[in-house]
Length: 562
Image: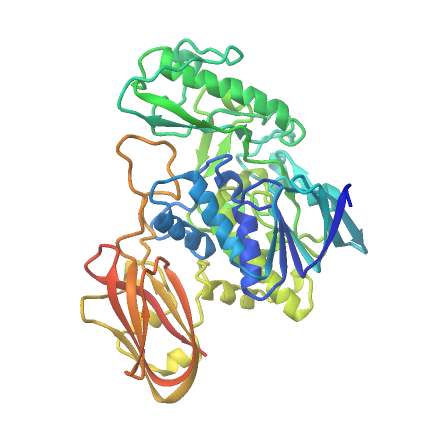
C-alpha cells in the first residue's frame, strides 16, 4: 500500500548515532550477545571520520598510548584494504564491521525525532528514514546516545548542559569567569591533490576574497593541514544554526583556497581542490550531566578514578568561540594535559533517565575537560565501554548505574582495551600452565618491556601437568602503537606516504595442539586475535611464520581461555 510506512524493532539495546563512538558501542554490545539496533542519520557511518567530513582519528599523545580494541581493529583493517587511501573504501570498512555482526540491525539515513518515556526510563525511540519514507520505532531495555548533539536529551528530559561553566563552579582556572553559551565551533574541511602540471582555480562569485596573508593571520597556509581552522559557530547555536553556519563555512573555505592559489605565491601552482565538505564537522554542543561531571582538575590530576573505563590524552585544546574570526592569535590554546588521564564510568550514564548511557563528545564533562576528551579515538574507547557495560547490565537485570565496575574493567581489558592504572587478570588456566616466556602472560600488553621478541624458528609453548579443556586462544601482537600516521591522510601529494600495516605485525602463524594438530592462520592483519578452540589438550604451541616486514616476531599476549 502506498503512503508513509511504519516499522517496529524489538531489541535489547538501541544506539542513536553512528559516529566512531556509536559504532564501537554497537559492535561491543553485539559481540557480547546483545540484540542491538544502530540508528544513524547519515548514509554512512563514522561521523566526523566519514567521507562526508574527513577528519582523521586523533587520540592520546605519548609513547604507547594509542587506543586499542575495536577502534584499532578498524584502523588495521583499513590499512589492509585501503591501499589507495580512498575515503569511500574507508567508509566501506567501517560499514562492513557493523554489518558483519548478526546481532546488529543497522538503520542508515534514519534521524531520531521522538522518544517515549515511562517512570524515568526510555521505552522507545522513533526515527524517520528518508530513503524508505518509513518511521522506525525501536523498543529496547537500554539506550545509548552517541549522536554528538545529544538528541535524546531534549526528547527525554535527561539533564544536560550547553556552553561554558563559570570558573568558580568547579574551580577551573581556564574556564571563563562568567558562564556563557559559547562553544567551540564547526568546520567544513577541504582536501587538495598535487598534480604534475599547473592547475587553475576559479573562485565562485559568492565566496569571500582574502587578498593578503594578513587577512588570514596566524593560520597555516601550506599543504600539511586539512584547514581545520575554517571554523565558525561558537558564538551562535551549534545545533539550531547549522545550516546558516554551513553556508558561511563554504564562503570561507572557497575563499581560503582562492587565497592559496591566486592571491600570492604559496607553492600551490600544481595543486587542485580535490574535495570540500558540505557537512560541517562539530566539536561541541549539548553535553549530558551524568553521575559525575569530569572537570579540568580531574584531567590535570590524571583521572585516577576507581571506576575508570577509558582514557584521554589529547591536550585541553580549547578553540576560541569566534573561530576563524578570532584574528588576534592562533585559533586555539593547547592547555597541557597528562597522557593518559582516566575517564570514569560514572560520566557515561544518566541519573535522570536511568536506562540511558552516552559516549562521544557529549559525555558528562565540563567544557574545559571536554576540550581534551572530544577527539575520536577517545570517543571510540568510551563507546566500547558503554556497549560492554550494556551486556553486563542486561545479564544482571540492572540499570547502568548498577554495573559492577571491576567486572566491566576486566571485560574491556580482555577485549584489548587499555585502561590506565588497572591490571588485567590473566586466566587461571594460563597461570597454572608452564610457559617458556613469562612475559606473554603478565597482563601488560603494550611497551617494549612487556613484549616477547623471537626470531625465525622460535615459538611460545604452554604445557599443562594434565590435559585440560581450552575454549580459545587469546593473542596480542605488536601493531606498533607508536606509529606516526593516522587512519587516513589530510591531503594527497604526488608522492604519497603509504598508510600501511605496521611492519611489526605478525601476518602468518600456526597454532599446534599437543604437537600433532596444526591450525594455520595466514594474512592476519590484527593486533588482537581470539581463536575458538574447544579442545582438551596438554600442550599449545604458537609458531610465528611471517610479519609485514620486521625480521623479528613480537608478541605481547598469549593466553589459554577456559
